[in-house]
Length: 140
Image (tube, rainbow, N blue to C red; front, side, top):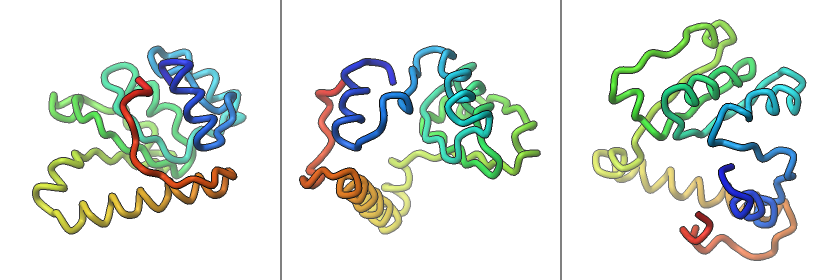
């Protein structure tokens, strides 16, 4: 997480413990994740990192982990990905939600509806009785 304000938002809104929200602007998150997961890694990563940070994040994958790249810069620039994580049965997905909305609007609507349900479930499970209205950009 790049700012304390964003960290506090995730903690207050979704009940994520502060010690599970990591710095994302430099590679300092790598050893923190290894410690927090006892070197097991992360099961699912949703990331817009590019370049070295994409590779550092990829190296944090757990056995059978899933990496979802929403930044797409490295894909569009024909970047390379270290193959060693595939030996851990990790998967790498890259997609542009805007293209899905344009080319497959029904799929886009289902994806947004599922995401909305998941986020509301997180709010309920963490004791927040409110419902998700919409994300505001005022947490930047």
